[in-house]
Length: 215
Image (cartoon, rainbow, N blue to C red; front, side, top):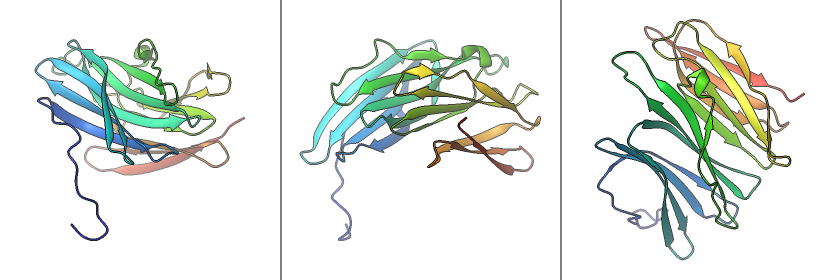
């Protein structure tokens, strides 16, 4: 390895297929890793905590199902002490053009190591297709597309959790063109607003941006 690289370290070995691992760092430089694993009909979300200072590793199963396929995994830390792991859970047949989709969110207190009793299930009635989250000290934002490759109506929706009051906002939606939304990214702004970036198109691509403002 070069002088600017550490020696690689095996964290864990799995029999399942690892899908889209995600990483976030807390204020103490500890690593928080979420990953989706799939084997046969089972989809699993796992959480891996890694303390770099002493190489301590802890692997925790977050959620397992045999009736859904997980995708679009996201991770972020809010309020300096709350780990947020979000993903899409999809039921139904892609070949038949029907999907029963919902956003699932699991939260862990980094200080006490306490998890929610079970993941929150959010907005399955809107048929979410792509999600992204952004977290800072004050809030957790979630954006998603209420769209799929089977729908002519493409919409981006947004909610946020106030970390002081623990109250969710009502969700707002922005109707877009009929072009399929294939990429969605969000990021907190310094004024507590939210930057939203998305891409559309199949035969061609177009990139769009807007900002959501606090009231």
